Length: 260
Length: 222
Image (tube, rainbow over all chains, first blue to last red; front, side):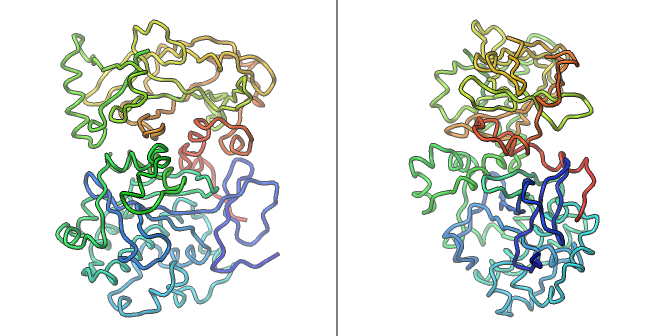
């Protein structure tokens, strides 16, 4: 049996009408298995905000209509340590090692330096998959914001998120849904409120930095998530790349959460 | 067939929905009534700006077991966890493959009072996992308030112009308890392990509320 390492994708499996998080024991081959992913939309009133990679330097895609991150055991440990606290400070903006990694666990190795299955098991004991996902999403959301601040020179305002977490207990309170995507990831998708997005990414900044951001109205977004637009390649003319089937699924499943 | 559809703008913000539906309420002659717009389905098929309202009707074996659903094996061999039907006008002449709904209204929420499902031909000719034929042509449920507009579950279709509502009914509407064999019902995860799935069913199975599905069970680690 191989010991799990921080870079391993989280493994979930279904047995006896339950979803289990596999940590220390091998998962029988006969059982349905999934990985875990979190997705985040930047909702902005009647639109979403798409972000060009120049603002993030993640190198995964030229443009992000929404953000999705496969969750690793390292991400889980990072997110469960001190739970709801935002672990990024203004000093992190100056620390190049934080931006060298493309995921939480590799950017903050110093926080999860004592990774072990026993420690992970202890942290996960009694915590639901949905809670693990929301804690990872919160940290990824903040990590995206930190990267945007770094590469666009936007002012970093951690107090807004701290206030929201304190007020509601979760930044994404009641603004999430889950589904199983075509690649067998159990995806938890989150929709921060427009008012909070407006506090973090002020409107004047967005409209004076169009090289980094593109506003996509809901009317357009709905069609961009459709098969027709995919088949005609119309999306290419809008943002310069084709959406994958899982991107389109995220829009079709998530659309109603953007405005209700 | 005339089917229920809403202009896309009415679904973009709650305030737009309230404004749209208030005009439909004022057109009704009955108290707590609403007169919704139904459009010719042939006209709508290539028209992306009107969002058609579609129901996916699923049957669970027992009120205490709502996580398994009756599996339809269609004549072409495709497997489906439920029946996709358009919400159609009450006076539809040839209603096969439709759901006819009597609506009530509270504030801006439009809800079903009674529903009649007219099963599509392929579903009437379907069999279950025991090889038995589906017994009904149509089904009337006189008290059913769980269809709530505009709170659909997801969008689908060539232009994402179909809003899908998932309706779940106990199987005693179809079978006597003796005939509702549990082996004819599958969980969404079991369904997703099968081959030759209907695409619509697959979209529903992937989107069923996993949190609700999982939260009822104790979370375990190994």
